[in-house]
Image (tube, helix red, strand yellow):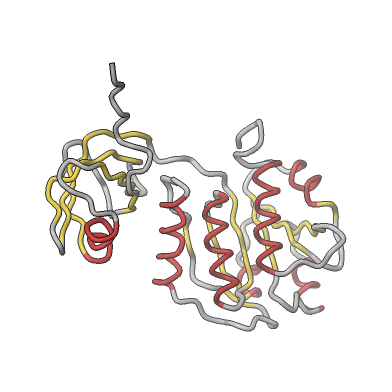
Length: 252
């Protein structure tokens, strides 16, 4: 007897849509997403598509109609509720566009809750295209099967970030001039956390002094080598997830 294939198939396309999605609801997909489904994935009536709405979770949907400009889906089954991700914020200094694109993509894949772009004195960029950046994190979330999009905030100058820093959130500061080993510092802290990583040229002396004066700041080292900004952001975030986040046995 031939086994019935699982539905929905693991290869089904995955998209984020405005919510909320509800049982048996019809969802109209338009624009670039409709083009992706109809022209790239070539879906037809009855095919499965996975939808996430960043509110109610993940839904298995079936194609009701597939046109050139609109694809209509019917929500058949909720597969997962919206996930709870660790309360971890990545405060990353703006970099050249391809490098910061990598930070946005990998931070999303690694599971951060919030991405806060930061403008420092040595940044080579001081602006971020918000629409493009949100598209990047959304596509990364679709690729890695997240059900919760990371919050992406407007870029802040370092001074403003530190001035309004919350009292209950630790700020791990990746200082290329030295600090405590990152893994030990991550493991020793419970509660809301954030990581601050500088630009290509690092923080200047005034900025470093300002950061270290913050009571919640905890200078850390990421090893014996000076890392590029994007490498430091990705490596330290992965380490935090392994030691204190949802990769760890405690599953914070």
